[in-house]
Length: 396
Ligand code: SAH
Ligand code: SF4
Image (cartoon, rainbow, N blue to C red; front, side):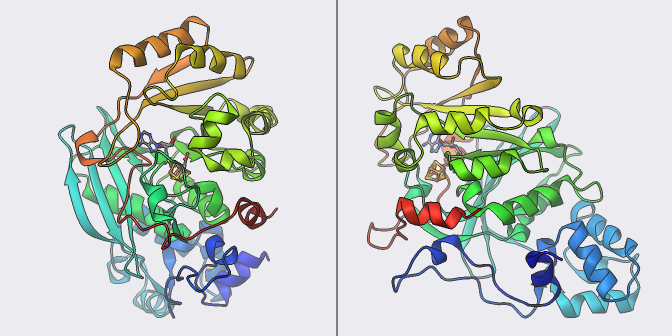
């Protein structure tokens, strides 16, 4: 039995946040209240099956519960009518449903909808539902805030408040799916909302298992993308992990000088180390890499940068996703004009790099992924983390 199995079976306990573990001052971020009942959505199917076995219940009930939670998306145990009354009562005495309440909704002119969901401790996280012709893509958060401090990102202004649990991560997908009025399904999930997913490694990995489960959403590996700012030890763990979902690396600069100014994490793991970690991912997983590159006027949009990008990624099986900078009130950068964005893309394409230009959805509601925020803090209020604390918190 792993430590996590043990925790799920025995000890009701709030998750330990990496920020809390790396922070020793008085202003350590609060954990969610240690609830007597556990969030049933924190459990993978294997973990719920183990719980059933420990209770002496037939294990197929775990599969039925998954169907009620993720396919029928009920909000109460009493609605799980294929389970006996006594099992429903047993569940109710041990678990809560982990329903998230929508504290706010905003609809963009292009149809994408941004939600702020309230967590059990009152904190808010944001998620976006984006319609396509045949399906929906959802963009979800992995942490409340983020510790990485990127200069261009609104979420960075919050600092890291706490990690989300697996149930709080998949809960966002459940609530967004409940909002869908037509017969289209959620087909793609991107971890590009608030937070650095690889800084919350285990809960994110559990959430991936839950989303992929056939008795749950049954999402394909190729339809889930985890985006990272480039935490090298975590990229290596991720590359070797059986979850085998798509990986996106936020590159956003082609020299360590530029990237280090924009993304403090680059001062610990510079570009060459990030790329080497990508190259070292086992070959059957390696093709799943996208490099995200924000085009910022006068900062990252020089055509010489495009040529450098081609050289950096030479020989790698990958794709580049160009994102024109999405400004917000008071943001320090600007997007280049569309002509420059196209010229940058054209140069990459001409030199054999697969490159897409993402014209962000939901610009009028600031729903671009990575731009979600529930309240900026002053520098003094932010949870601070040094790079060595960050590295120590990534562990094995
Ligand atoms: N923390 C992860 C995932 C969330 S951010 C990461 O950084 O990869 C998701 C993406 O949004 C990242 O590629 C980030 O570079 C991008 N992003 C952040 N702020 C942005 C902005 N103002 N305009 C355009 N893209 C932005
Ligand atoms: Fe965090 Fe990503 Fe924003 Fe950087 S871009 S601060 S890693 S959410």
